[in-house]
Image (tube, rainbow, N blue to C red; front, side, top):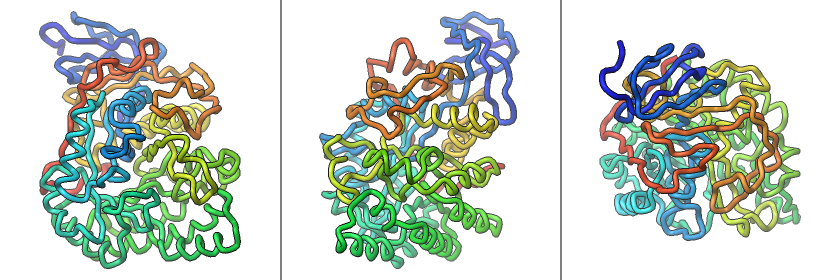
Length: 468
C-alpha cells in the first residue's frame, strides 16, 4: 500500500539485498524507518537517491571494534573512527572493553566510556561491551543492569601496557564468570588462546633471540587456539552460558564449535577479514601492520574458513578494528602493538573477495555482516535487515568502482592499514543511519558529527540463537 503523506526519501532502482534474494526495487523511508520496499514506488518525497547500478544492503553491524577510549589521547576516539566506519558502510558498532583506561570492568568505567562517546559524538548507533576478569565477578550484575551488550574475556594475557584493570581469566574465573553470565542471560565473548602454551613458547623464542613476526606467530600456534576453544566450549556446556568465539583464525576451531552447536550448545563463531584475505607469508611481508592475535594462518586455513563461511558454519564476520599510532607499530615481532586497523574496509573487502571474486551470494554475505550480528546481540529486528519497520540503516555499494587503497582514502586519525596497496573492485557510494546520510563518496563523512544513539541491552533478556 502506498505510504500516506510526504516521504523523507526514496532510494530508486537499486538491487536490494534481502534475506533470501536480490530484488530490483525502491526503498521508501520516513521518520528514520524503512516503510516500504517495492518496485517503482510512486509517492512524493523530500529527497530521491538514484541507486541504479548499485546494490542496497543492510548497514554493517560490526560487533568488534577497539576505539581506544577514554583515557588514551593517542587513540582514535569515537568521532574520527565512526567517520571511518561510516565510509565503510557500518551503521552500528559494538565497542570493546579494552584497551580503554580504565577498561569497562565496573560501573564507573562503563559510565566514563558512555560519557566519552556522547561527548565526542558518533555518526551511527553503538553498543558497549563489558569485561570479565578474575577481579570483577561481583561487578557483572551491575554492568548488565547498566546496559552492557555482552561480556568479553581473554584466555591469554592482553598485550597493551597500562590497562592493569583488565587481566586474562584463569579457568576458575572463566567457569565462575560463565555461571554468573548465564544467570544474567547475557553472552560471553572470548579471545580463545591458551596462555600456558603461548607464555612458554614466547619465553623460549625470546631466550634464543627469535624476535621476527614469524617467531611471534609460531609462539601462538593453532594448538593454543584449539585448546582454548575446547575449554570454553566445555565450560559453556556445563554452565549453560551463551558463548561467542571471537576472531577464530582456523577452520578446525570452527568445526569444534559447529559440532557443539549440533549437540545443543548456544554458541556462535566469528572470523575477520584479515584471516579470510591474508596468508602467513603475506603477513610476514606486511610486518607489524598485519600483527594480530591469533596470528594469520596459512593458505589452507584461509581457504578452509571461506569453505565454512559458504556452508553457514561461520555466523558473522567482524573487523576486530584495532587502530594505534604508527609509533606503536615499530619494534620487533613481539614488541610492536597487536591489532589491525580495518573497520573502514570490512564491507568492501568481503564484497570484493566474497561476491566478486568467489561468487558467494550477497544474501549470505549480508547475513554474516549484518543480520546475524544484530540477532546475536539483541538488535534485531531493528537492525541488520532491509524490511518495513526496520531502521533505515542502508549502504549503497558500487560493484564496479575499482581503486587501490591508499592512506589518503582512510578516515582514521592514524592513516595506516594492513590493506594499503590492495586493489578493491567495489566502493561504498553512500551510507545511511536511521535515514540520515552519514557518508557519501562525493561528500565524505558527515562533518557535523553526532546523531548516533547508544543501544543499551535490556537486562535479563534471553540469548538469541541465530535463525538459519
